[in-house]
Amino acid sequence: MIRLPFLLFFAALLFSTGVYGVLARRNAVMVLMAIELMLNAVNVNLVAFSASLQQLTGQVFALFVIAVAAAEVGIGLAIVILLFRNRETINVDEVSQLKW
Amino acid sequence: MIATVSAQEYAFVVLAIVGSVSAISVVLARNVVHAALYLVIALLSVGGVYLLLGAEFVAWVQILIYVGAIVILFLFGLMLTKAPIGRDTLDNQSRWVATIVGAGVFVGLVFLIQGAFKVRETPPFPTFHATTGRVGESLFRSYVLPFEAVSFLLLAALIGAVVLARKDEGT
Image (cartoon, rainbow over all chains, first blue to last red; front, side):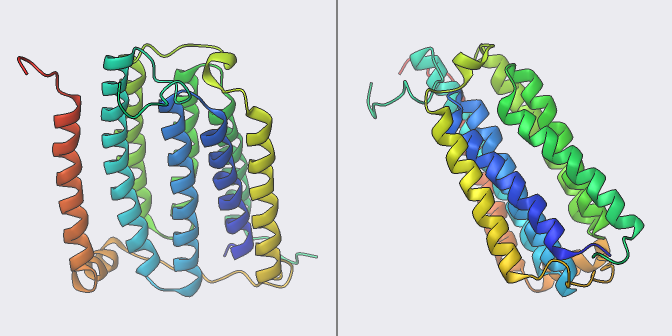
C-alpha cells in the first residue's frame, strides 16, 4: 500500500549518497562502502517495481545483484589488502601507477 | 493532496528517514568503524522496506548476506589496513565537486521520477505477497541459467580472492 514514487525517491537519495561517497572518499574501503549503498538503491528499485507490477522477476534479479555485490566486495577487499601490503597505503589518489 | 496515508506508508517513511540519515552518515563519518556501523543501520532499514513490500525472502537474504557477511568483511578490511581517523585523511581534496555531482544526480533523478509518475495521482499498489516458495519456483524454473552463472561467478571470486590475498612464499 505504498506509493511507488516515494520508494523511488528513497532509492534516488541512497544512490546519490553513494555517488558522493565514491567521489569524495580517499580510503578504498570507504569507496567500497559507498558502492554498496549504490547497489542497495538499485535493489530497492527492483523490489519496488516487482511489487507494483505484481511480478517476481524484480525480486529474482535483486537476489542476483546481492550475490554479485558479495563477490565484488570479496575481490575488492582482497585487492585492498594486497595494495596495503605492497604500498603501505590504501588512499586511492596515491595509487596512480599501474606498475610499482 | 494525498488523501489517505496507510499504516504501511507511515512505517515506510520512518524506515526511509532512518535509512537516509544513516546512509548520509556513512559517507560523512570521520571514523571508519562508525561508518561501518552506520552502514549496518542503513542496510537494516532497506531490509525493513523489503519486508513492507512483501518481499520476505529478499529481506532475509539482505540481512544475512549484507549485515551478516559483507559488513564483517568490511570490518576485517578496516582492521587489516590500519584505518586512519579524521576527515582530512579520509576525504580527498575535491569534496565540493563530489557534493555538486551528488546533489546534481539527486535533483536529476527526482526531476525524472516526477516527470514519469504524477506523484499526487499515483494510487498505492496492493500488497504483493511473494512467498519464499514462489520466489524459489521462479528462480529454479525460469532463471536456472543465470543462477548457475552467478554460482560460477561466486566460485571464481572466491578463488580469486584467495589467490590475491595470500602471502607469496618463496616465489
